[in-house]
Length: 162
Ligand SMILES: [Zn+2]
Image (cartoon, rainbow, N blue to C red):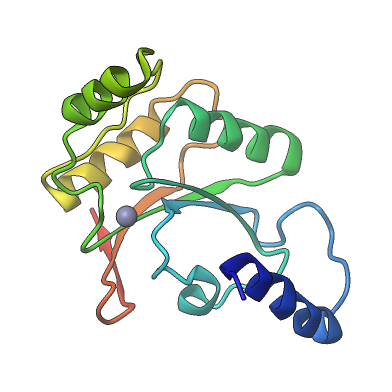
């Protein structure tokens, strides 16, 4: 059984207990920007239910242009107001070398990627920087409640970064 077959099989069980449709607008009016890391179960860690919040994920939980695009849609058309940014310990983007990665892709494909892959060296400082990026984005109408946290993958505890 492939991993995808496993997912399809698991869905059959899930459908059997699925509580039914929810409104499209997130109930908590909140968007969470976080990393794609497979160890972050934010529904479990934050007590979220289906329909509660938008989750926007990428490598590192970095507010790139594409993340800001999704956040603008989240707030302007789907009514969210607060933003939570969660970075985490043992992140694959910690110490990531953007220049080397892009040079490798360019060498192998002959095409230079139009995007950057920002990494970081200081987890808390990078979380602060991400909060600042959202707070200074003029396309995001609600920027008063933007808060940053670090998630510890060893304990599942979140700690606010002020
Ligand atoms: Zn990560």
